[in-house]
Image (tube, rainbow, N blue to C red):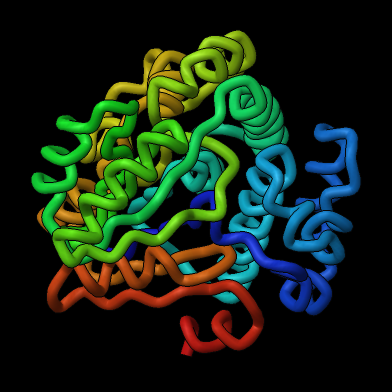
Length: 302
């Protein structure tokens, strides 16, 4: 059983997807569709924007999703098939497209609304995120629960990596505690406290767009950050996706559920190889590779 994985926010880099798209011109349709719906030149953002500009939420979310879809379509054109999908946070939108739950146009409509709502929320409520390494999720939860300022565990990435989000003061407070515990704390290159209660205004605003989108049952298994397992009820995806903005990403649980269902190979599509690394750290005997450029595209098909 093969799972297609899709990169999350923070994985962006300058020029991502450029060599694959230029080698397979038919893939430029993805950028053209995105540009029409976004009202901005998506190809130019992906290929030519500075890292600072690319890292703005309103740019990074559609750019990463487009890159992930381009990489997937390039692999499919060369015969790649898969049995299930999962994304990390933002990556769930590429996963929904890949599973045929939504059209390409609706994927961009959703991500346009999500990115705009989240960028607006980060401007009104200052937040930050950091990855905590080398201690258990339970220890991370305990320290956050004892903090005076607001901070909480939001991304359960592996048994030894948990991402926290909160106010800058909250992140600073617990970072000192974690350092004293010999844990490694890495600030993340994101604009706000994603997947925390500080994003509630974004979730409320996003819902208004999501409720107008048509969602179909996926053609392959679809695994959810929100539940930490396979999602089987698609009757109210607007509510589900709104909750997703303010709820933890239970990626470790998802990986366990996929392995239990028989998944042996995981292929990450999109910039970077963060999810590939998490699979290797979490699942024994699983094969994990990524596709982000022509070199890795050929590698996964060989």
